[in-house]
Structure formats: C-alpha cells, structure tokens
Amino acid sequence: MKNTIRVERAIKNLTQGELAELVQVSRQTINAIEANKYVPSTVLALKIAHTFGRQVEEVFLLEDED
Image (tube, rainbow, N blue to C red; front, top):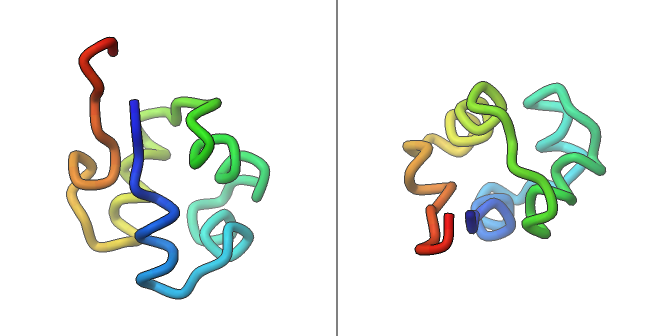
C-alpha cells in the first residue's frame, strides 16, 4: 500500500511530529507509515485522512500486489 502522507503534510505545512501529535501516535509511527514499512490500523488511517480533509482512499492507495 502506498500513501501520500508526505505530500499532504507539505500542503498543510506539518512536520511528522506535528501530524503525530494530531493523530496521537509517535513521530516514528508516522515515519514508518510514510516509508511504507508499517500499515496503519483502520482507525489511524481514518484519523490521518481526516486531519488532511481527505477521504482515506485519497491518502492510502492499494497496489496490485496488496
């Protein structure tokens, strides 16, 4: 699964730490999600999308191999 978190953070001018605070996780968790090393829970994915004012499908994209 790919994601557009880095792009969305840039649009909102948020650091990883600031986004992490807003969705109540560690900065390392945001880093791991951005690097595609960790797939977030449904609740966390929804929180992240909501923070950006996007639908979850706009932030998290399934790839063919998923």
